[in-house]
Length: 235
Ligand code: GLN
Image (cartoon, rainbow, N blue to C red; front, side, top):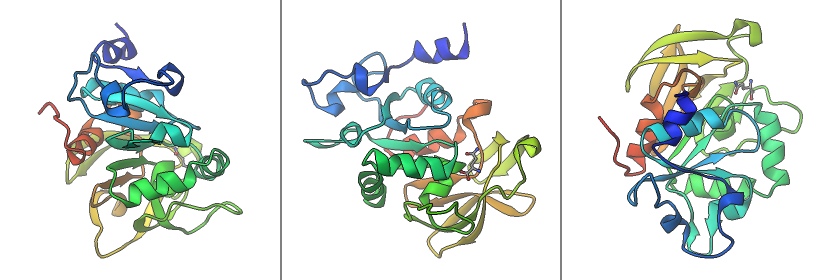
């Protein structure tokens, strides 16, 4: 069976279009093959790698909702997800789409209020307080107290699969036009370095990594996200 098929057999991907227009609350909708107690994780699905994140999350027993519109994130009863993934892609494009879809403010407010969030690569750039070399007009959510430099490890041809020793454990991950963290605030913990440069940070329930764990199927960081969200995670 393909990795996708294997993951899908364990849980459910709820795309916004698959959700009934009315009916039970977002929390109840998470019930399904993944089980009634399974955390429901929203994966921002405007641009960039989405499917691979869903596969890792499903493999860990979570259910997954793709977020494209504000109402995918917040319903009449409050937040519809227990945790959030901001995937890689191109941070300036994701920023533009967030504003176009009216998701920028709701997302920023939810993360700032403590919704457990994993940002990978462009997702880390999006979380950062300061982007040192932004594209013209580029904004970030500004919720994670770090400064990041985009494309700090070179261009697409410098992409590499790398084994890292992180404070969460050993990890095998992919670097693709990856940013590097150049300043961390007082409340920010460094969780990963590559050649001395900071490539993974944690602040409260926010985890930001410069790389792609989902492309190598590395579950370490998604598992940490689910733990931050109070989810049960296989050891
Ligand atoms: N360099 C991209 C950016 O600045 C990030 C690349 C990635 O997400 N793989 O957004």
